[in-house]
Image 1 (cartoon, rainbow, N blue to C red):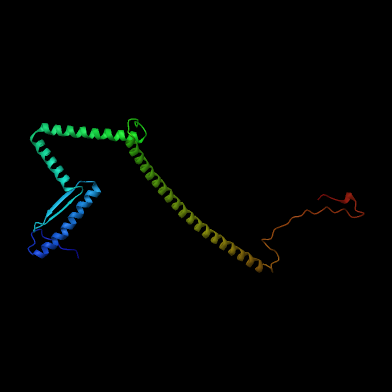
Image 2: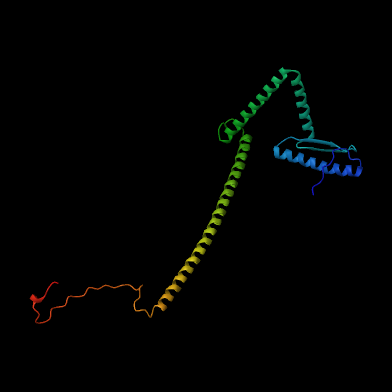
Length: 222
């Protein structure tokens, strides 16, 4: 039987309240960590127990989470009070996204070996390290795919080999049965005058010369 539905109200018993707090606190912290990892979210969680004990979790740092929260909260408050501020905020967001896109496009061209004349030795070394790391990952992925294909072909080859063995066994069994049937037919047919399965041999007889004293006139074609 499943657990009954718990009424959401304050637990009067202090021991039960502490046990429930510990269990649900751990579950909440676990969910916060999973949310941060799975969804690439910046998560900040602060818990004060009834005894004023602090429990907290931050995916990056609690300070950066709080600063970001206060900043966005303040911007949101200004946006609600002044439409011009909202327009300014979105223009700033668009400019930031354009700058990020430009940086990514430039970095992509550099990875392709273009527009590297203005880079310093340190930048070229960093770019080379990135390319070597990317090449290593590509080779590892290629080797893994080839290994998987070889394993799959080996598995299919083993299956085909087993099927061939089964077919050879069936063919040997059929040949054995035919041989036994032929041997039985030969032993039971010794008393028969004619063998129906024996090959028929046809020969042309040579014409015989007429007997002495027989006249060719007395011979008739019919």
